[in-house]
Length: 346
Image (cartoon, rainbow, N blue to C red; front, side, top):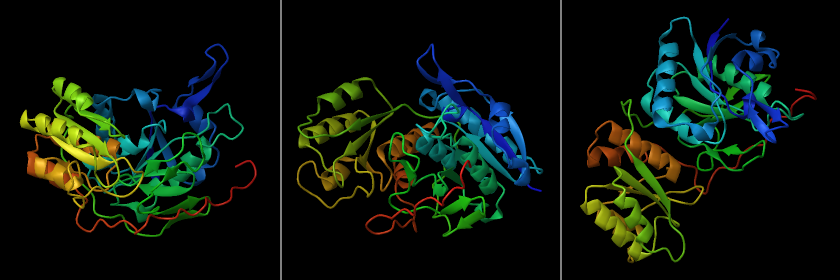
């Protein structure tokens, strides 16, 4: 039987309603979550590793690198076939992507959580955990980097997005579609993982993220540059376009040595140099900004922070943020199949 290391870090999957606090609070440790998850022994031997009960919105980079080290240690154990990380869903698309960047072991790494707390009759934590363990034990995902598994979908870490604050099918890969599906019948991988980005680092630079909007001048970016971060990511409108005053402020920041990257605020699609009017993507690139391909603003920030933490120069940073050769989105986005039906009470 396969053996899977399960790293419990907290999140909604660990929460119950506290009437005094007035809402869900972290309460369950890893063993308590396992006890609420019947059927795991039929899938794999699960080795629980408790790493606390941290809401996903509280994570900081040093903690994420500590978890990466624990994942790496579990992967190095010859008796472990795969690793599951259980965490809050709020930042899964960023944390999973960071681990995808810095880890290079072939053993599957699956990140999961829950959209409903253990107090809810719709508590989805047990099914998501069973699905994640099934994926971590699957040889079909070996060598595929870090994936996110929720709601029956298997998503590449560099493509997954949380598209809704509370829906059970919140996690989607809008550009590429899922890698496959998983349910109690097994793992079904529909396509291989696209080429991945990688950077060797245990530290992150200080990177700020700004979102462009209508009638936005350069004052906010000037103020951000005054904090002297290592980098700034701008989520531009459309394919990479902004008010020219925002570009002027970015140019001033670049002249002081701050690395500026450009992403799109759209939920899918990429930035590019198609528009050459003042503030268009082409003018951002000419000013020295790095274009972040299909990476969302939060993911571009993670990649830039990791690259700066590794001491990469501008050309290497540009390569890291760009879509890897052979990385191909589905034209016009990817329709997401509905989750497989669950039996009553599952």
